[in-house]
Length: 632
Image (cartoon, rainbow, N blue to C red; front, side, top):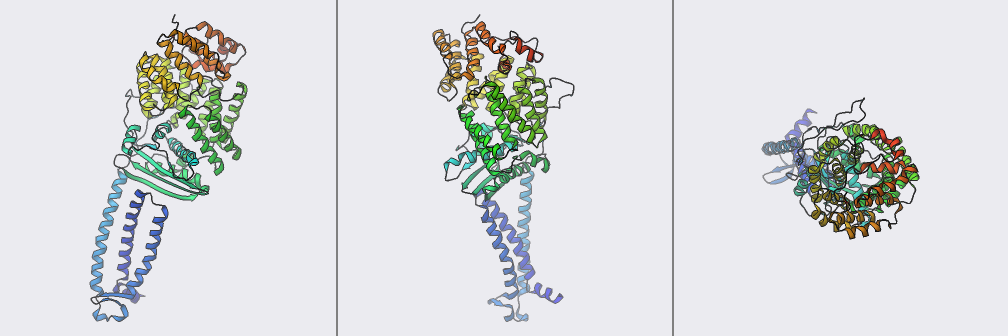
C-alpha cells in the first residue's frame, strides 16, 4: 500500500487532484457570479458541476498513465525513471497550487466582506403591550420627523415580469408577487414597501437606485415568471440598491405543483439574506400560505390581483370577481384561512356604506353581515398563527360595535406585526370612532415614519387628521398623497376633500377632472363635484348636483350619499331627519358607520346611543364643514 501511495506522489497524481479541485472550485464561483447576473437557467450551473465532476477522475487517470516530457506527452511506461522529469513538473504544480490557493483565499475574503456589509439586525421599535386593565390602549407617539430616511432592513418587491406566452397569466405574476410581499411584511423587523407603491413601477424603465430612493428602501427584489402548461420558471434576485450588488438570486425550474414551495422559499431566503432577527421556525410560520392545494392557491392569487386592481383603478365591480375567486379557493380547500379572511374583508367593506367600494351587491344589510360573520369565523377557526388570529378577532369585534375591545386586540396585533397595512387602517378607524384624536395624531406619524408609501393608509390618515382638526399635519399628508399617488383615484378623492377642508380651493379644482373621469362610483364623483361647487360658491351648480343625488340608482349607497349632500349643502336638519328612519328601524350597523364622520352628531339617535353610547366621548361635539353652501 505504501508503495502505491509513493508511486501516486511520484507521478504527481495527488498534486494534479489537489490542483484540479481548487481550480474547479474557482470556476464554479466565477460561473455562479456570472450566471446570477445574466438570469441564466439553473441547469447551466448544474451542467458545469457535472462536467467538472466527470473531469476529476479523467485528470487523475491521465496523471497516472501519462507524463509530460521535454519531447512531449508520453505514456508513463515508455519513460525510463532515470529520464523522468516528474519532480520538476511536481514543483511547477506546487507553485500553481499555491497561486490558485492565494486567489481562492482572496475571493473568499472578498465575499465575506460583502456579506458582512449587509444590513445588521437593528431592531425596529414597536408599540408597548397594552396594560391588562385599560379599556383604550394607546399607541406611543413617534418622532415628529415627517420625512424619515430609508431604513437599513427595508425592501421593495417589484412586480415580477410575466414572461409567459399567454398574456392572461398577468394575474398569476402579480398575485405571486403580492403574496411574496405579504409574507415578507409579516416579519416584524423588516419594512416592506406597500403593494400599491411597488406596483406603480410596473414596466418602469427607471433604474433600481432611483426606484429604491423614491420608495425609501435599501433593497429591491425583482424577478420574472414564465408559465407553460404544467411547467413553471420563476427567477428572483435580491439587490442592494446602493451598489447594485446581488445579495441573493435563484432560478426555479419546477412543475406548477411546486408553486407554494417556491413562494415560501423565496420569502424565507430573502428574510435570511437580510439577517432579520427571526428564528427559522417562526419565519416559516410567517411566510406560510396556509394551504397545500395548488388550485386553491391559484384561485387565491387571482383574487388578490383582481382585488388590488379594483382599488387601484376605482372600478368597484372588479372586486366581485375577486370575491368569486376567494369563494373558489375556499370550496377547493375549506380550511384555507387567508382566503376566508379576504372574503370577510370583501363583505366588511360591503357592510360599510361610507366606503367607496361598498354597494356592489344587491343583498340586504342583514345578509351582508351574515356573510361577513361566516367568513371571519372560518378565518379564526382555521388560522394556525395565533398572532394573526388577534387581527381577525379585532375585525369581528369592530363589526360587533365593540370598538374598545377591537382596539385592544388590534394594538396587541400591531405590537407583534407592526407593518400590516390592513391593521394600520383599522387602528386609525378605531381611534377616530372613539374620538381619541391625540393618540390618532401620534399614530399617523408613527405609521408614516414606518412606511409612508401606502395610499390606503395615507387615505385613512387624511380622514383621521381631518376630523382631529390637525390642519398642519393634514396639509402635509395631502401633499404626500398628491405627489406619490397621482394615479390612484381613491387617494385623489381623499386628497380633494382634504384640500377643500384646508381652504386650498384652486388646488382641489385641479385634481377634480381626474376624479370626474375615473371609474369611481357615480355617487363618489358627484360628492366631489358638489364639494367643489359649494367651495366656489357656485350655488346654482350645487343645487343641480343636489337634486341629481336623489336620482342615483344605487340603493346601497343612497343613505350615506343623501346624508352627505345635505350636510354639504348646509341642510343639517334635513340630514338628521333623513337618518331618523334608519335609527327607528334599528339598523345600528348602518348608523354606526357614520361615527367616523366628525360632523355627525349621534345624540339625536336613541337606538344608536343605546348601542354604542358608552364608547363615545361625552365631550364630542360635531364639527362644521368649512365649504358648506349654506353656512350658518
